[in-house]
Image (cartoon, rainbow, N blue to C red; front, top):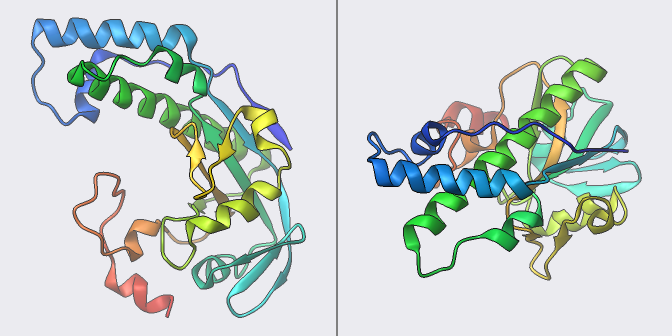
Length: 224
């Protein structure tokens, strides 16, 4: 099990503008975003927690990873040829919550939320690159509890149990409804794959601001 921290995060006003899906930025908005970026990067402490885990047993719609049982037909199918996987939890850090703008400044809150999302995304990509370089698993894909009804968010509890005290390790805890606190956190399992897989390919929800791939009905047939 490893904790990655002290990550370099580089964010510009243009990155935020792109994430906000805005084409133009006036001088006052650029000044606001630049000030918020400076404030965020002054305190940001993103962290990533992961481990190398091994599959012990596979059944029709369950898989046993390091002695912890996960129930998901889609996860099971994705791990058909896998023996080694990489469970993870990544967070932008609760330090950012302490310097968030007041709720009455709606634009600042909106922009700062996007900045926190970009910090989380940067940490996430840092972890992925680290795993690829150190363990050379080849092409990888990932699944996240709650991204599909087949693998509900309640499975967060099983995932967190692979690590022990996640809060003590990187400051992330589960709420009674299995959401993560701080909210700018993400968890899941990386696994080797020969084909492109994203949970969005199996999801019909539309519109969705977090969609990363188009719905693929042919892919759905493979998981029935």
